[in-house]
Image 1 (cartoon, rainbow, N blue to C red):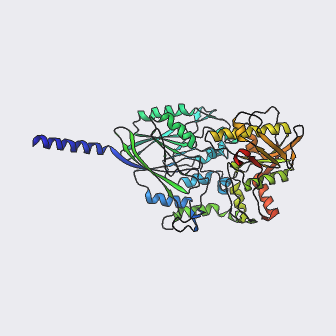
Image 2: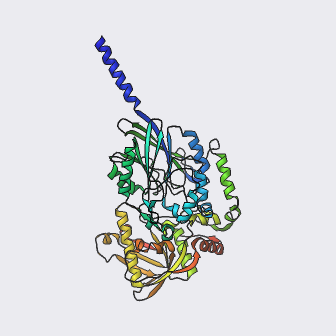
Image 3: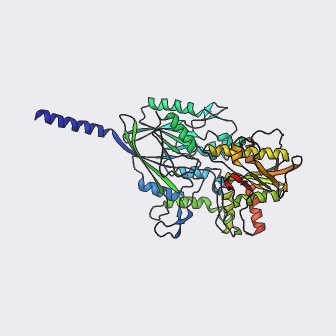
Amino acid sequence: MRILYYTIALIFSVSLFSQENIKEASIFHWNDLHAHNQPFKISGKDSATGKEISYYVGGVSNMLGYLHKYRTKSSLLLNAGDDFQGTPISNFTRGRSQIELLNLYNIDAFVLGNHEFDYGRNSLDSVLQIANFDVLSANILDSAKNTLIAKPYVIKETPGVKFGIIGITLPELFSSSLPGNISGLQMLNTDSVITASIYDLKQSGCDVIILLTHAGVENDKQLAGKFYNDVDIIVGGHSHIPLFRPLSVNGVVIVQAGANGRWLGKLDIKVDTDKDTVMDAYENLIETVMDSSLYDRSAAEKINRMMQEYQPMLKEVIGRLQSKWKASYSNESNLAQFEADAFRIKTGADIAIINGGGLRKSLPKGDITINDIWEINPFGNEIQTFTISGKTLRQMIKNNIKIRISKQDSGEGAEILETSGLNYSYDSKVARSGDEDFLLSFNLGRAEINDDDNYIIATNNFVTSQFKKFFGDLRENIEFTSTGLIDRDLIIETVKEMGVINTVLEKRIVDVAMEK
């Protein structure tokens, strides 16, 4: 009996001991708000009835309301960057509005995204002075000072669990920003800074190591493949992807919560603090549906005060849309074609080129306000022109096609360059084979582009600043001329002149391999 009692007692004590080392925690996260501080309407179908419904989601007041409901002392709150840029208030205040609003959250860590640099380095430094939260970026160096521009990592604790959080900003920052906005900065080797940070965090006794990244899902998967022995979780941003089921790469949990504040991520985990291991993880993306019983009224009032000065101008109706404007990063869209046409006509160019990723919002049919144009064109890019031969233009487009195909084949997003004046067709199957004779037609209107003629091209200064990224290496020397025109001002003027707009999507770029 004594032996049996001792055995039972031993089993009980071991079980009790092991349970004491299993801790639960929650990681709340969101990313890519892009200054969508106020609720916005979305439409869809009711899953039960199949009927079209619309409702409001997002906004700081709703996000805070859901956090007030679910957050506990065992929670962390992480933001994966790009809170700046997307609505006029961020532009008017050069990001200060976003820092003031982020201060309401009691954030544990915030990683700098690429759009935090859109108003320039000095402006970012200035507004971060008022931040009451830890700002991270382990891979950006101030070359003049030879110091990091933010903390590489931070240690946070919930009851019984010590977390080490490493911040990583988009490694491709220099190909995603205007050069003037990031002058004096240097990107450090991502793998090296993560390795160094992991060492420090392990020395400090962290149970769980998190990469808080603004780098995109593909980069996150690569990081998980390299650092799975030490990294437990990657909380990401930049791709705007709502991962309703978290990815798992070599046991590393990868999460991301879409964009614009529609979703609040809630990752519930169980941690074995003896083994410094995440035993179990469950992700839930909470849709921030507007709920009057939840939303934070003081935050809503603060945002209304911020906007009060600008509302009369932004609400001005300048035209009416008879068909929906659809923005697209990777495919032709009637919105991009409308803007490219406006660029070409207003500058007197032969051809206009516009990058699909520069247009940030679709617009339903109905009234068009100045605010709509600001949200479609938040960056305020300048329109520039340049003159090149038809031969060089042909090589530019061929290079761009190959660059896009390479990105598609590697699983990356392939940004389209929309055109006005220029129509062309190609065969991606031939291009993939290595045969250079894949450009099938290449026309200005109905006439073929002549290699020996010169053509004036209009585009924005983001495309010209990232010319090699879009068009590869060219032999002809190209000089860009500033027009002094800002894209959104030109579009506002065009809408006012036209009044009623019905933009029909045209096939200006055709991959015949996709038509078969």
